[in-house]
View: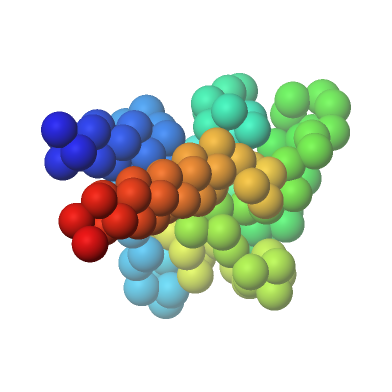
Length: 146
């Protein structure tokens, strides 16, 4: 029973983190990416519930930065956003020091996925809740067999 429940929780957490499926491009070689005429930047805003909204695609220079991509996204949607973090296509939050690096450093085949999120969106909250619940469940199970 507990194993099935933990597997279900793991699937829910994975779906919350990964969200809807999108093509992944990975990181290519910076020098090769610098030769791109444009980088196709696919951007989405992630709500606190983990839902991705307002997908946008921008053509940007390989020399432009993550900060430039964020500005382009805000300008395209016509209003500011509260989401202060930038995540790569694997859900990792980029350190703010990386915001000044050229897009070519992160793209592959002239393509890049970026998500804008809160510090603690549903994926992070779900992971914390899942870990807490798992810990509590195992503590309870252990106490019954002592």
